[in-house]
Amino acid sequence: MPSVVGLLEQRELVARRRVDELREEADRIQAELTLAERDWKEWAIARSRVGEVLDPAEEAEQGHDQVGRTAPSAGGRAEQTSSAAGAAKPRSQVPVWREGLAWSVLSVDYQRILEALGDRHRLHQGPLTCQELAVMFGLDTVPAKVEALRSKAKRLVARGWLAERQPGRFTLGQGPAGQGGAS
Image (cartoon, rainbow, N blue to C red):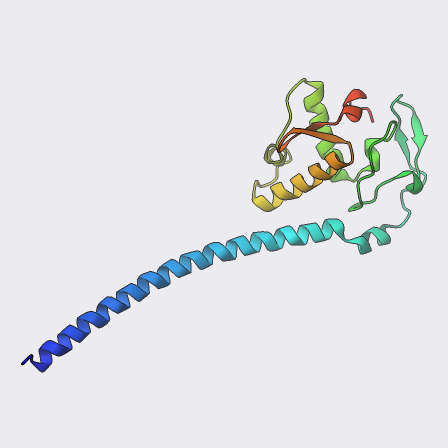
C-alpha cells in the first residue's frame, strides 16, 4: 500500500507539471495578444486616416475658397479656374485628368506624389513603389502610412493622372507625362 506522503508527492508533481503547462500556454497567448493589439492599432489608425480623407463634412466646410484662383496651363500662361471646373479642396475627390487640367487642382498630398513621379519621369528613371514614396516624403514606412499613399496613388491611377503598368509600381500617366509635368 502506497504511503500518504508518496501520494501527496505524486499529486504535487502532477499539479506542478499542469501549472508549468498553463504558464507556457499563458505566455504564448500573451505574445499572440500583443501582436493582435499592435495589428488592431495599425488598422484603427488606417481606418481613421481613410475616414479623414473621405469625410464629406469637411469638404462641405471648405466651401468655395478656391474660386477665381489662377493655375498655369499646358502652354505656361495662367488660366482662371473655378470650383465648377474641378478645383479640388483638401480631402476631396480627384478629378479625372483631361487636357489642360493643372496639378494645382489636386490637394497638396496628391501634388507631392505627382511631383515626385514627374521628377523621375524627367530623369528617365523607372516607376516607384509606395514604400519608396514614403521614404522620399520622410514618412515612417509603417503599413498605415504606406497604405495611405497606396490609396492615393490608386485613386490617381483610376482618374488617369498616374499609370500602374506593374502591380504596386507607379509612374505618370500618358497624358500628364506627355506634358512633361507642366500640367
